[in-house]
Length: 63
Image (cartoon, rainbow, N blue to C red):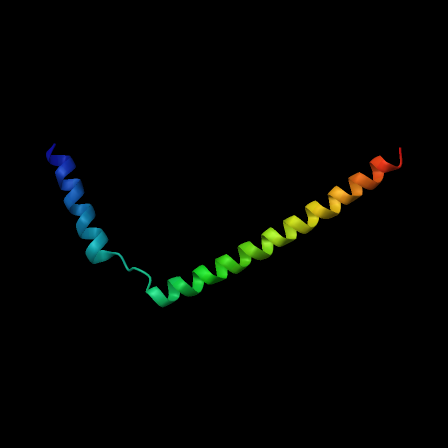
């Protein structure tokens, strides 16, 4: 039990005093970049889905 309590205390000390946390403006900036990249990726995938769907429909309509 003493090892566990020591681990918790050391973890708390490390997380509050030794870790360098990213500043809020940088977090917001990188979050916006990730959001935009995700939206672009989703639009590309949706476009590919529509193209393939229409291609398959046209192949099936031939028969």
